[in-house]
Length: 320
Length: 187
Image 1 (cartoon, chains in turn brown, cyan):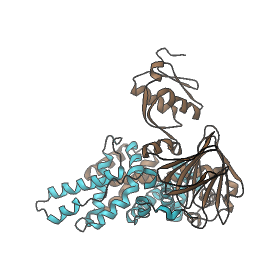
Image 2 (cartoon, rainbow over the protein chains, first blue to last red):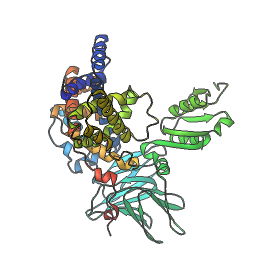
Image 3 (cartoon, helix red, strand yellow):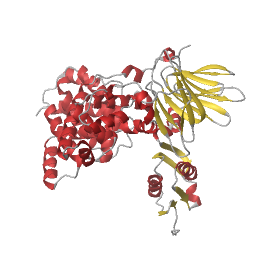
Image 4 (tube, helix red, strand yellow):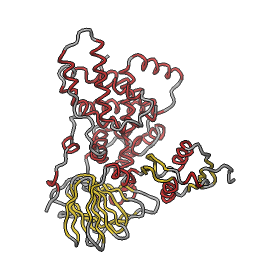
C-alpha cells in the first residue's frame, strides 16, 4: 500500500476518533489495521497531531477578534477570508474569524484585567501578548506603527515592514524595531526591554543603545541605563506568561502560590509551613491552580483538600 | 495517547518540513521518505515519557536515523554510500530559543494557509470544528447536514492537509536559524 493510501485510511480513522466513541467492532477493526504495520500507526498519529495543531489558530486568534468585532470590517482582507462558503452560517463565521485584525487607530486602547493575559493580533500581522494589569494604545499610520504602553508589560512579535518601524513608547523612552520580537515592561522605577529575536534600538534621554536577541536593557526613570545578557533559560522563565505558563526553577512553594493566587480567583492555601519553604521546579499552566496543586501533592506526598473556592495543600485535618 | 499526540503536535510536527528536506537530499533514501516519516511518527507516539527530550527537532532526526540504521542491518548487503549518507546528519540541536525556531505567528500563518486552501465546504467544517470549537453534532446542525457528512469532510480535509504538509518547502529556515543582524533596524 502506498504512503498516500495509508494516509487516506488514517485520515478516515482520525476523523472518526475526533468525532465520537468507536463502537467495539470499529475498535477491533482499527486495532487490527494499526497492528499490521508501523506505518499505519505512524500515519494515524500524524493525522491526529495535525488535527490537534489546527485549533491553535483559535488560541491565537480569538481574544482580539471577540473584543473588537466592530472593527473587523475595516481590516484588510486576508487570504483565508477570500472565497465564498457553502452556507450562510459558515459565511457569517468567516466574517468573525477571518483574522482580519482591527486596524489600530489613534489611541485604540487595549487593557487587561488583574487576572487575564490577552493576545492581540494587529492589522500589520504583528502580534502582541499583554500581561495582566496592562494597558497599551495602538496608533498605526503609513509612517510608523506606534504603541504607547501606559502601564504593565507587553511582548511584541513584530511583522517585518521596513517602511514602517514598530515603536513602543513609554514616556520618553522608545524601543524601535522593524521585524523582531521583544518585551517591554513598565515597572515602578524603570522600563525594561527584553529582546527575544533580532535587534531593537532603544532611545532614551540617557542615550541610544542597540540590544540584540538575548539581551535586556533596563532604563530607569532616573539614573544610568543598564544593558545585560540574559540566559535563554531565564528568558523563557521571565516571559513564560506569554504562553500563560509559569516556569519555576527552585522558587519556594510559597512564592509560586503567591503568583498563582494573583492570577486566579481560586486560591491555594498552604497549611504546612515547612511545605511552604520547599523548592519547586517545573512548568505549569498559570490558570490551572488545581493542576499545580495536584502536582505538588503528588511530588511531596502531601494531602490536598478542596473547599469552596480554596485549594488546601498539606492539610492533615480537612478544614471542612 | 492524547498526551503524546499533543506533544507531537507542538514539538514534532513543526519540524517535519526540515526533516523531509534533509531526506530529499539523501539520494539513497529519498524514495523512502514517506515510509520513514510514517514509521518515525509511530516510534514517537510510543514514547512513554517525553519530558526528558529537550529538542523535539533533534529527536525527530535521531529517530529517523535509527530507522535507517535498522534498515541497513536488515539488508544483507550493505552499500557503503548508504551508510555514509546517514553519517552526515545535519546540525541537530541548533541551540536557538524555542520562540525563534517556530514563532507562534508562523505557526498561525501555516495553519491559516492550510485551512484556507481547503475546498469550500471542507473549510467551513474545519472553521466550525477547530476555530469555533463546535462538536461534530453542533457543526452538522449549523451547516444543516448530517453528522456523517461532517465526518467525511473532516477526513477529506485531513487528507488534503496531510499531503500539503508533506509537500511544503520549508520556509523561513534562514530566519529561524540565523539572525539578520542590524539590517532589521532602521535609522
